[in-house]
Length: 296
View 1 (cartoon, helix red, strand yellow):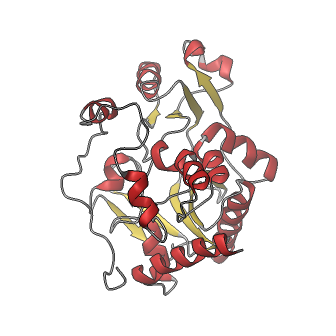
View 2 (cartoon, one colour):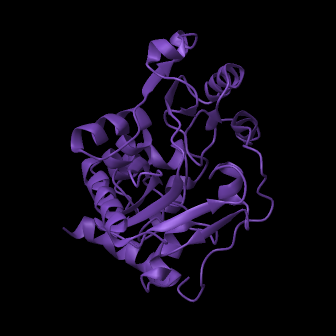
């Protein structure tokens, strides 16, 4: 692995959001078991399992807790930090208590889906997204009531609780964190729209600039906020915090991804490279930091 500069994006990734129900229905054994046949047996053979999953399957803490119970070593954050970071509603509350700047917003459950925006204390435009989604699946920016109602219906297809927050126009950034320390800030410039599912997984759809072209004061403020968010969510090993920067140079931490992507199009390897860390060394660093957790 250490001789490979970085992973290539898998061929055949579609630009549209995947049909998760159809994918589950295609499973050969049709078991209710969360894990497929032989997965645990194979993981037990490994010195350590390198976690490369995204979304609720890999980032909500369930798999990490399962491995903890079974004595299987794994890379990346612990089960508690993963669970807290995965729930965007809980994350927003923790950020507010810890002093991490974040957009205002509220949670909405299916039984309250017809609640008027004004009763939620919000006005258009807004961002609608699943409470515990990943890879920007089910995330919508809307500026009309018809679009809002459609976005709510679509987001509820993924889970029974969603987050609605005011839309903040600004530049998009990310800050990787390894062992509690921030990497160089990277700016994400989608060629169209925002950093959604299609732009994340299609090569050439975004331009990334690292280190970001922002002044030192904003850079340091964003890095400190990323480190504070990482600590507040009780994460360890590594993660990536996503930010918006508005026209007044105010920063907003949107969320922290407990298992950030590790493909050629992913942000963390590019940030590490800007800090002088090759892809192979990044993987080795993650492994060594993770192993140290078990030797403490």
